[in-house]
Image 1 (cartoon, helix red, strand yellow):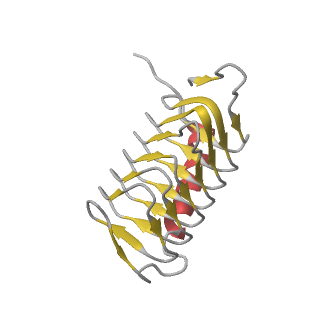
Image 2 (cartoon, helix red, strand yellow):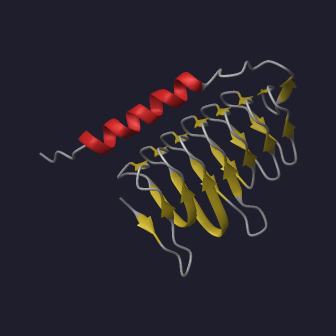
Image 3 (cartoon, rainbow, N blue to C red):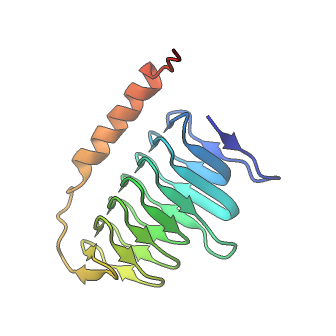
Amino acid sequence: MPIYALGDRVPSIHPTAFVHPEAVIIGSVTIGAESSIWPTAVLRGDTSFIEVGDRTSIQDGTVIHCTSELPTRIGNDCVVGHNAHLEGCTVEDHCLIGSGSVVLHKVIVRTRSLVGASALVPNGTEVPTGAMALGVPCKIKHDAVADGAFQYAVDMYVARGHEYRATLRRLDY
């Protein structure tokens, strides 16, 4: 799998995490226990850093970047959907970031919140605890997410990461 140091910036990947061989990890990137990084995801910690917490899934095609002033932090027990783009933002614990969404600079997605599929969360937006951010640009729907709403998906991807770590093998014909 392509995992790269960039100068003195070296990724730190917990031994129980699963990083698919087609994902790319560059520079100052930390990936927590039992997290999973899926095919064609790119995490590029070149000018600041990226943190992915424990039991968090970064789906296929997602791009996570940072800026020289703004790290990107994703908490524990999160699911980041396919083809999302996160840059210079903070996603707290127990969140779902929908497929195809864009979460930009200085955004804070508070605990137990959801960013809807294809939503655009503009610079400086705060998505409150338990809220949904839906649309382009997003509108906030308060008190819309129940406790534990995403736990099934988190548990499923933790189990899937374990399965892939144990049984994935490349077949070239």
